[in-house]
Image 1 (cartoon, rainbow, N blue to C red):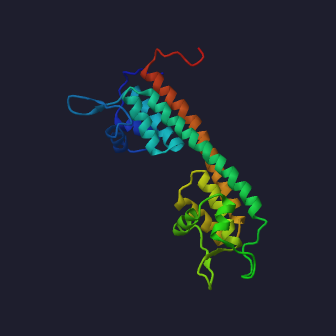
Image 2: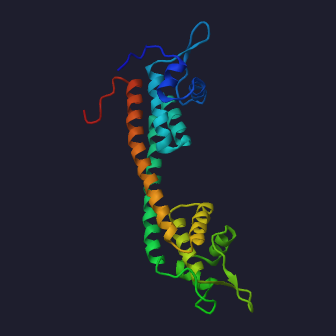
Length: 245
């Protein structure tokens, strides 16, 4: 390991990661790498601590996102490693929930794939109360989903009451699964619209494949980020014993 007293210029740190020296200075300003010492003439003097901090931050971003990565690095800088690790734990938990949601959506896709994308007007149609009972939600929830653009029920010509066709039931079941998985209504509306545009669940299979690939990439990034953060923490505290040592 290089000496912590070795001096680096902003351009030295920037070159390793293919970023600009100004970006390095911005990271220092934002508190995601420690403040640099200054020479008499005002030039920044970075050390191995700053280099390790920058490696850790840039590995944390693809793994946990900019907000969490920043929170982690600022917590470490503030001497609060538990807060940093808690933020990482929360991110891991979110990824697990996302995976479980995809499992549920995939199961729903297999079930929904057997339903035709539409039925003749004379086919079975559900009133709002029946659909709410089927899903185990309140009618008010279905009306909220309608306002969000997730559902598009038609109105009975005589009673003006909402009626849900086969494709509306399909959309409601998919929305229910996604909602239970913690997805926001606007995200659900986007997915349902894609399924609706495709005329069924075939396109959903492609989306599921894409999402799983992204989750796998994020999980791998988390492994890299954990290693880089551990290296940074050891640079800050060289006397810390390795886990299990």
